Length: 425
RNA sequence: GGAGAGGUGGCCGAGUGGUUGAAGGCGCAGCACUGGAAAUGCUGUUUAGGGGUGACUCUAACGAGGGUUCGAAUCCCUCCCUCUCCGCCA
View: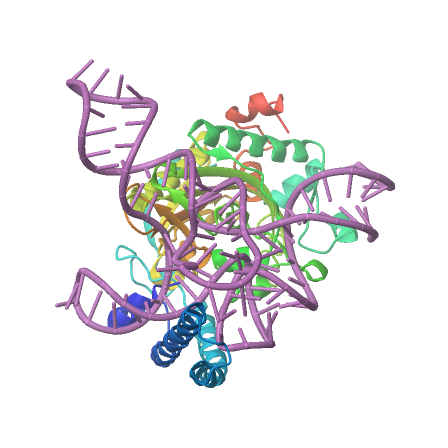
């Protein structure tokens, strides 16, 4: 959620920064805000008088004046009068506030000053590449689904029986590889200082609203209607929401978490895309990195987060590149975002495997996640960041494709040997 | 699923209609004491919104929403959540 005070103070400035992401109607928000404040002023003045009356009656009764005396009856009558007026103003104000909230919740975050301006993904900026010497140089490279099915470790067909299309069953070495990847990544991150958490993955609506998936992207998540709970689309949601409505002390920051969870996405609106393989499934595993930090350190924390995710790809010797997303391609809540894209030889291109975002105070304001500096008055909003470290299914795809051998076998990346206990899949 | 208890400030915890924004404690900050510290003593310390350049000021908030009343943390209703015991179950 963007800062309403900032919007009030500098509407042009906010408008200009938002325009780099699309068209948004700030005028009606400002108008509602002004109306609401007028009402609030009128209402609070009435309440002040009402409080006076209440106190005066109390004092008089205490002083021994009879409760039924005309003096008190007059005050009582005025009190009743005020109450009638208030009972009209209050619902109006509440309604305005609700409208205002609805509108402001649908506004995306302001891009950071350093985010390149651009219309869409074509204008993202490539920051660097790594590992081109590891790119397989052969003509007969197969896509990972062919490799996996031939080895009998990926079963898409029978998964349709069990669920739907866009689900997979991992068999034998496939399941073992998935587990190994999870374990390997978590161990790395824990070593780097992240505290592992295993959060609930059925989550409530407040949580989704705090991190920005609601109200705008309800159709992207699976919902258990009977219980008013949702399947987490990413561990970002439950992990960040561990701190919702809390006041942390400054010394508790920074908070670094890593988490393995399954993730569930409806992938509405991407029906034709990536229909085969592990790239776009309704259910997939992911190791996520989440940080809550002091605002002064969030930029560095972001760079470090990207590097922590990239380290995994380097350890697996998977070629990748780093993109900085332009304003037009930025996720809803992100102020700044780097994508890591891994090399997929069968497609001959890089595909997203991690998205590392700095949300600034956007999520913290929605989720009311604050911290207090010892000895200072008031509270401040934390900055939240997160990134995949990494998406397991896509990593598996990259491993199968980059490590495939001419005879159809797949070599196991060196760093996974201790986890898998075999050199060949 | 059945029975009961409860939701109060950063935390613990009092408080059943009128200076209760809320006792007390912890924590935190300042001061005193000390060579320095600990201990101790004193003082201060909620958040959010509005108005004002500012000192400051108004309002709201004791799980949420409604009701009674001139006045509600306190009484009534509805909902949500947590805990304990029993049952069932991975």
